[in-house]
Image (tube, rainbow, N blue to C red):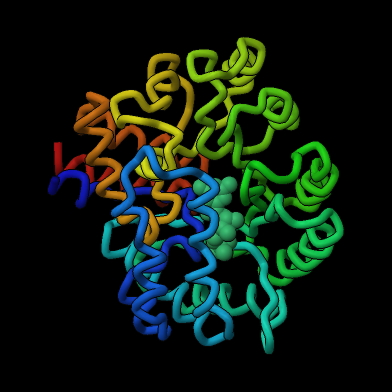
Length: 335
Ligand code: 5GP
């Protein structure tokens, strides 16, 4: 347990409003019943959970992150919590949102301010999410804001993500926007195959994003198709895995059966991440712990996952070198 905690870790898939701790929710004035709703997944038997249920839960965080101050405080706390878990590099992601008295630009600025003010020894970057549930028009507006913000904060805003309920929207309708983002120098990461949808997976893999998220239903053993799996083996797009998230949202039944095994067996690139540490009651050390326990990975292999994850970051080459140096130093003192 101490090993996974002290291992310097790289977090590449963390949604801001799914990462809020109970302490943060209390600080921001959540009611007890809202806190219970936000945390309820831990009490629901696995066979009664569906992905759709999970998507209803974010509203309980959104209720209290409606002002620049609360968004700033929430971001600051999330960074501090990852730092305390020995995460040395964090890519936080969030969907631009407008509320009474806070437009989408101000929302992003508040997150950026908290990242800029961070003084802890953890490097933090921001990915902005497009929600596939939104209309094309709203996605277009959000992209314009994202491009404007990226111009203003090029050292912090590094990428764009496609997330939201996979039962809604289609990547093909949004592909042009993602291409435009890429043309403007943003890295791309796409939530992929959270439900069986081989046509969409094909489109996503052919777009060749810098990373994909989750990918539970890409391998033929899990309902994917041979053609897509072959493309992935060829493209070697790094995959962001979130073990507990998949267990709790019902895409995987047991840690031992997680589709990450196919990536390990085929030596495909991946990282291990938390997704929504507040909703899923986890932290990155815990996720590495599960990998140690259920996937028969050795401590040295976990260290190697951290090191390899540096390659998948949206950081600069200088920043990557520094992260690798930290990991090498830690290894010398540990093994
Ligand atoms: P926010 O973007 O508001 O900071 O974080 C919450 C949002 O992240 C959710 O409303 C949802 O759009 C997205 N999200 C969080 N977890 C997941 C996930 O596991 N899959 C997908 N597709 N989207 C997610």
